Image (cartoon, rainbow, N blue to C red; front, side, top):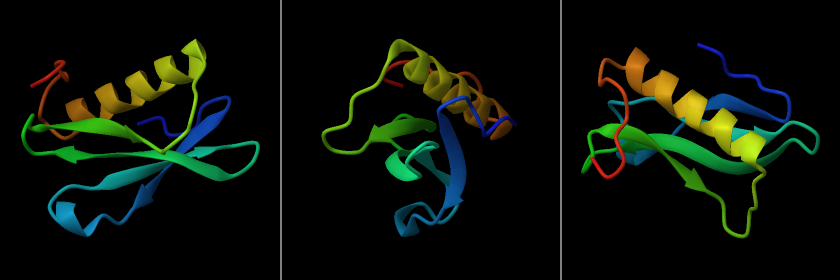
Length: 85
């Protein structure tokens, strides 16, 4: 699964509330600053993106995030993510 993109990178992270599912922190590669994370959302039974407060994204970054979340959901065996569950 691809984790490094032109401007962002996803690294494994620890999220105690999701012991059964691996989470990922999304970093801005230029500043090495966390801009959000990908975690399991039980109500929708899929991984979703949680943006950090006061972050803004270009269309390209949003596309990369969507590609990563889709890949994590497929790899987890949960299938392709649907909006709202």
